Length: 328
Ligand SMILES: Nc1ncnc2c1ncn2[C@@H]1O[C@H](COP(=O)(O)OP(=O)(O)OP(=O)(O)O)[C@@H](O)[C@H]1O
Image (cartoon, rainbow, N blue to C red):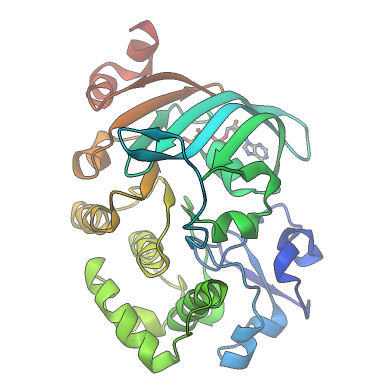
């Protein structure tokens, strides 16, 4: 899906979702990168830097609050995310989708969520990042010791959550390089660190391109415009590489990837893993898990995690299907 330009002339970065331009049914999380269905105001649909500077400062994946006192530990690892009995409905229809999700993620862990189509996997991840299509009706979500549900989407991004969407959108008129540069500088500003000009930024991003095996000319192209499905997915991981994250939520990052691209993307994600950050992957297939190895696999059914196991759960699933899992 392509992003559209509207005629809105200004945005309030601190409350982006409330802006009429963004109150659309197709809105996705307002962060600078991986905007899955965002509408960019006409005034921002230009490649000049002054326009870009006016884009909302909603950079994702910035571990600003690295000093947060989230003390619960397991084997020396800090508790990153604790979700308890989370319930949520679709805002418009009030249809219940999440029926009490429980999930605990410590730093340095890789988790995968699997489940039948329509079981609520994407909804869960979008609820975590504060997508306005959904309303939380119960439960808690604590991220780095802070109440995630109390934060607006921008704060969630700035506190270190990155989400890669199933269908990253194109943003006409905004070059990939400018987009990433702006996102990077937003983080630097938030951290009180020096911003990088375009030339300095280029050398910074150059090594990241290598990590995802992307050619340099992708930087000069407009964000995701004309990119193949696989290129969009690589671009998502490039954004993650540039911005970093304490918790990267990757929604079907393997979909549409050929075998080589899958390996590139997996290698890049693995290269970004440290003892302090975590990944939550949503996938249907074991092939991704062969490359990015999760410690935990969760099966979601009817808006709840109904089973948790290790990698053997994915192999079992591959052979027996979900019926086998439920019966197991
Ligand atoms: N904004 C929405 N409007 C209407 N229905 C929605 C909306 N968001 C989710 N749903 C419905 O909620 C259910 C769960 O959807 P979700 O996308 O979370 O499932 P999923 O497990 O990610 O599925 P898949 O594996 O096919 O991607 C589906 O029946 C879906 O149609």
